[in-house]
Length: 338
Image 1 (cartoon, rainbow, N blue to C red):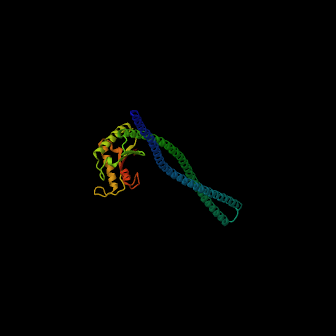
Image 2 (tube, rainbow, N blue to C red):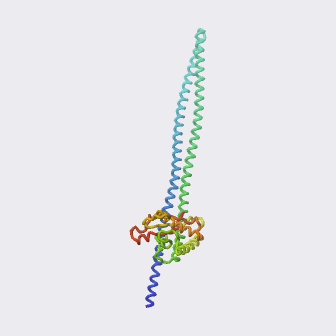
């Protein structure tokens, strides 16, 4: 009979350990997936900002290209004007030569005709001088346009080089961010697993303390009386155990690991309206704050803890029974990132 009882006790001790191991493994996998999704979300936000800057740069390049095309069109028009002026100058020079020939053959003509011819020649000279001035002006404009065109081509080349450099930097930033996120996820998952293991050893297998997902869940009755937010003595004893584990674990964690203990207060869906607590929001928040303040008094750093009140809006059990109400009145502890 004694051997049979001893055998049953060994079976009973083996099964919870097996279940705890499976639960820990599942919790770690779920947390890794959650952090990975968050990391991808923040990375996509960062890349969206880079894409916006790249789009703005492309618009500037397009504007420079349009301006370059306009300058080239103006250059062609100026060349056409120059050719027209040169053609006019050539005709005027031919006419001048013709008049000079006529003047040479009419040396014996009347003085009046000679004077008229001289006036016509002077007029042609003035016209030729004006045409030459116009040609010089057009040449200066063409030279200025060529300088502007060269500057635009240099700006376009610089913009293209900057675009390539930006693409390379974005790719490098994405790779470095993925590596950093993976390292942080691994570190936080390892310390969370260590925290869960130590807390299980200290608290044991109590029915009013259980693991739900990636957090430890304490029934509110462990810490508070009904409708109150003042810690009971036995609740402080449980928090002392939790504070001891957190302080030991905090000394082991790297200082730059952004971990935080989030304390979530939850109530059932039965309304409350008192002078101290006008709603379940106030009650759940007050209870979370009371727990946080006590943990801080036990030495937990103020920047490593946060209090959150959810009221009745995150129930574990949607049934309208006393058992469901009891399960929904709870305090949850979760190690997460800031």
